[in-house]
Image 1 (tube, rainbow, N blue to C red):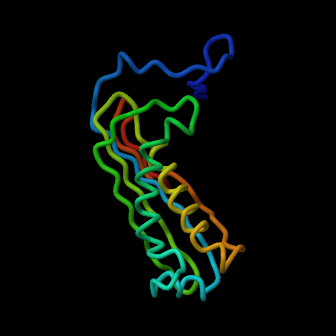
Image 2 (spheres, rainbow, N blue to C red):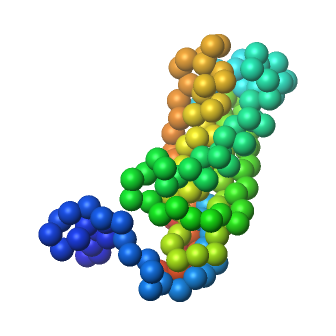
Image 3 (cartoon, rainbow, N blue to C red):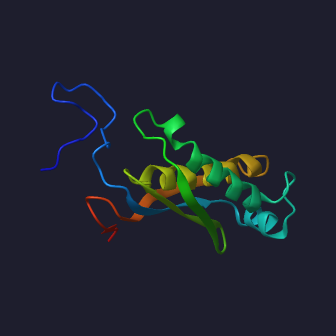
Length: 157
């Protein structure tokens, strides 16, 4: 069975040493969803939310979130991102799906950046719409795929 990498031989938490790893192109794609009242979704689609363009703001928040993953997750390496792309899909009558692709050329992967970005996008939607719908539900945040690095490619079933 595989071992956790963020603990040393004595069980102490540590940042994984990636110094000897080769720099390669690394890509990760993550997703998540937010479910809301149908009327809330209509407000978002019509651009009538009191705070403005909800999905536009959520897209920028996702990109900022990806760039700040290492500040939020204690043992996550700070990395230079080369790309963060955010897509939203409306699933009538009450759901928005968010998918984020993060890319870098480096010694460690971008899974945490993609997952953080998807989470922050959905939290931003919640924040911007909570005045009309406090019962929104964020769910299914997960990694869809990752490419590059020593462990190679991985795609969710």
